[in-house]
Length: 202
Image 1 (cartoon, helix red, strand yellow):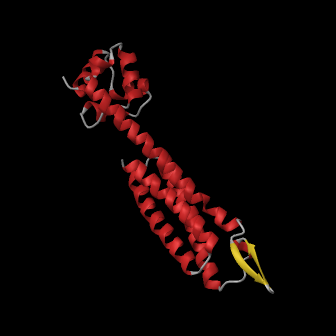
Image 2 (cartoon, one colour; image 1 turned 180 degrees about the vertical axis):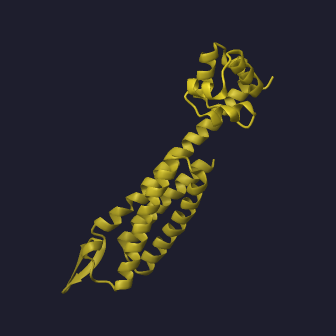
Image 3 (cartoon, rainbow, N blue to C red; image 1 turned 180 degrees about the horizontal axis):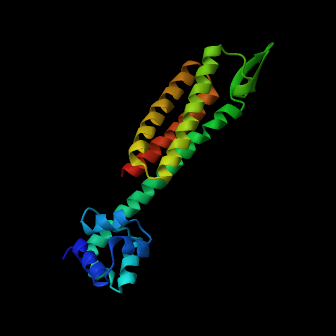
């Protein structure tokens, strides 16, 4: 018998509704309905709760092979979540490109390094683009961490694509405007995001 049928049988043997079982397992009724209709499987933690609640072994609920498959899937999902979270933090970390003295500012015969607030030796449009890039990256980072927390995968993918494109544009823009220190840091931040993408695509 499939897991869906076993769970349904166990629930009915206790005279429980899906909602009552969901409350006992600390999950939503939708989750129980999904499991019983065969549209998905519980997490390893939920399987342990089911096993304990009905006093049955994990082997009685699922085959060892299926348990390993679920554990591997859950592990990949956890790694992806961590990578997504770090990805968002990297974008938020773009604020350092505003605060650090990375911009060349000419004062008489000397060139001082200043932060973006004090950067006056550039045309207004260059400063406007700098502010736009950093503001957008920080906003994308906040959205990425929020969507990761609420497991909104569809929105997460869109944010990832926009963030990568903006990161590439930032590196090109700072290279063209000859802002050496900024382009190095922007490239490093982009490289970290590329590594994270490769990590959770495995």
